[in-house]
Image (tube, helix red, strand yellow):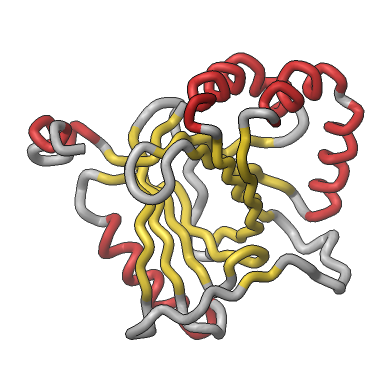
Length: 215
């Protein structure tokens, strides 16, 4: 299980944070729009966190048999605790529909993973994102410490804030002790939001051993 070191929220191209606008419905033909990434967040009952993680470690292979898992993290610092965050890759919306239908017929996955875990979850969130064109996805290793940072932008999409967002990401990542995993922008969920995930490379972080005592 990977660990998210923090969940940071920043604002670009705006002095004050605008109200968050969410999109959860599309009426157009989107089933062939190309590769996208689904961010899924589960808020767990505090007393059930370890049980959920153990079952996930044991049975996640039943889920990855149907579609590609980019990464699966538990949150350690920043924001809401007792939370897991995972990213799934789909070729297009039609592919996601096929996967959901297959999962509905997979009795082993339902009985060993889905049904036991549902009782441990308080709330679920789903967000559809796309990889920005100037960043390639790097598959994260199985272990490590990661940082998830979100940027709430002005309405207008990447055409308006794409360049400032790119500069901000490179400013935070190009410090010698991190490795960029991926940079995304939201399509469904909270709109006008950019997200990046980076891995913390402990051997390159000055004073990391002393900093550990404060984390």
